[in-house]
Length: 137
Image (tube, rainbow, N blue to C red):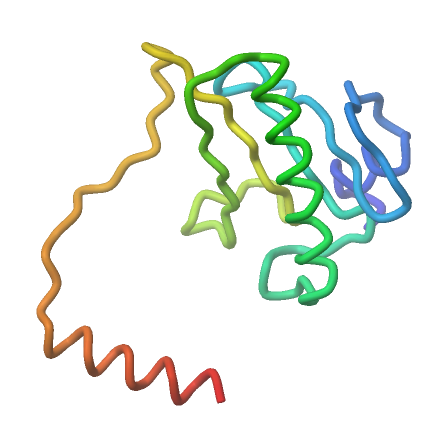
């Protein structure tokens, strides 16, 4: 897409602090980081979200995510990592090109990715489980 900022980064039309790149993917430092080393992984081909991402590309992307995350931990020495990927405006997606966030976590970093856990009704869970199993057939 000609107006997609991540497509422009993928093509090199907008500069980035790239840490890994191959024919399918680009991995670069986020210019609005949540923490030191916050990194984005994008497919070079425009895909809006996970619902448009094919399984083969997703598998390759997560192989790269694993490799990059391990390298980041070795170099940056953080305590943990959040891996975040938003789909749709209601889920917080603001750029409609699939991108995976690798967010290093440090003590007192003030990054907040939380929700209030609530105990689920077991009958509702069973009904939901049954519907999802059927839907995956």
